[in-house]
Length: 185
Image (cartoon, rainbow, N blue to C red; front, side, top):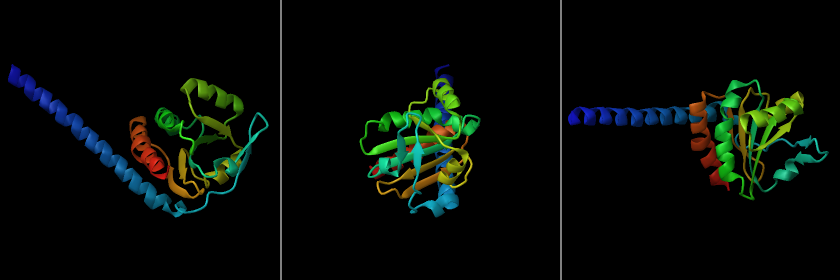
């Protein structure tokens, strides 16, 4: 009986390790796909922008000068966008106290929908409303979610579009985005 239990335990352990390896291989292949498909943006200066905020202040390139910036584009009806919120919250938690880092999330959702999404999904990071035309300009007309990492000079260092299921989204965020951000800080 003890031998049977040992065999079952070893089989379970190998299966779990094997799944982690498959998951990591999948994440690595996604990273390669992103670099191939969206590599044309790497090295470009991010376009100038000025966003008027509800409190009558503004947010612009000047706010992000000399900072590493993670930009997330999403909207509330986008299932992959919602699927990455938990992972983005986790990454934000690790980076929020770094003075040379900014995390901003843009959406074309209304201010009321933004407020309800922040509450519903426990969004921890700053969410800013953009008009649809400005949203499309700033994410280069790509679908959502779109995630962009800028270095301290405003140069695009990483660009990804689209999502997967929630399990892979968390892996992508913590094994691709987070290390890339840390390498730029």
